Length: 272
Image (cartoon, rainbow, N blue to C red; front, side):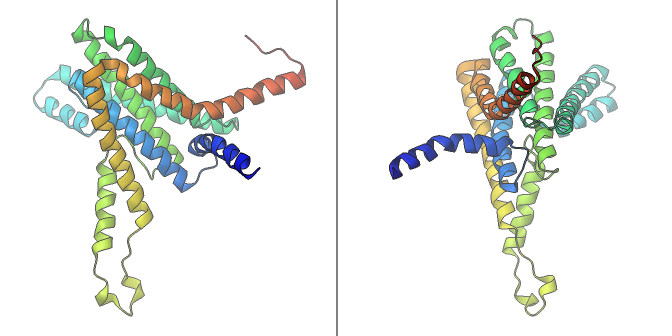
């Protein structure tokens, strides 16, 4: 009996983890766990994208700087290209904001899962069709860059939204800065502050561990993304896409179940 109960608990564990990642009732730990996995995804897509088009697309710092450089040099075509990438990233963030706010308004379970599913579908399309995207490079390389910038804007807005701007996953500047701040607090010598608790410096060890995890996952994702793209090409993003579908599936299933149940109660036909 006891062994059977343990077995059932073990079988339910994956569902508990998936539920924790995308549940609308959030805890800080859940945000860090979701952020860590999305950092892995961002690192992999960013590195794979660089292997494909020789350009990083997960952060806008370099792109905005290049816009300024080319403006100063009167190179209008690269300026337009940079503005297009910036607009694509912003559009991805806009789509996430619309989906999440729409989900909150309608009180659905999948307000976080919807943009994750959209990201998965875009990456799946990119991975499946990627083999044909090198046919005419002057056209397809900008298209790939726009798609990847959209995906990164979409993803970064997800974790930013649910963590209330505490976590970013597509760029590490803020994460590394926070790591440095917490390490500085950790190494700070408090002896001179004895008897004066006002100036006591203490590190937030939980925050430090979480940011180190996110940084490590981004780096690990970059290594995996570069190696897998080098060996298998565009199809390497398909497993990442499938994983995002799995993460988002539970909450979407709950909403679909509730939708069909409500239509059965009312006796109305579900539109095809």
